[in-house]
Amino acid sequence: MADGALFVGWNRSATGREQQAMNLFMQVMEYYGELQKSGRIESFEPVILAAHGGDMNGFVLLRGDAATLDEIRREDTFLSHVIEANYCLEGFGVIPGYLEDGINTVFSKWASHFS
Image (cartoon, rainbow, N blue to C red; front, side, top):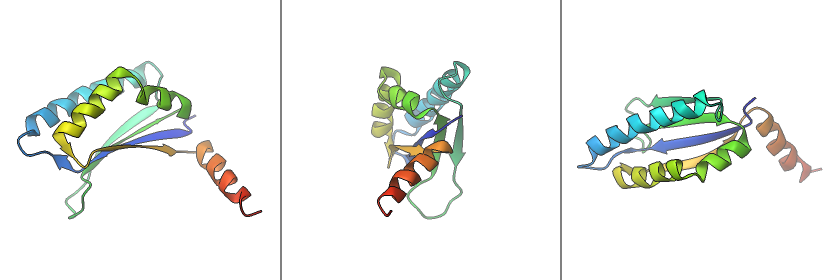
């Protein structure tokens, strides 16, 4: 059961780097598929947001074991994708998060400060 998440978000492709951004997106989707097939992540969900005037236009949510997601974030392939994304996308970021039992753990620790 997934207790961790990686939120990979972006605003838009950098001007003049649209094709590179599209190629990277396709490579990353294949890579995430391989991670899921091998059992290293539980799932991933790409989302493109409707026009809304904000500074986030898409994201991918990866679900899995928090410790395994932390390992993946430090691996060469993931880091290479992050480096290239920072070059061809505006507003790119990777944020670890908590799901399911991970949420319970965080809230328990938070609540302990008020007991």
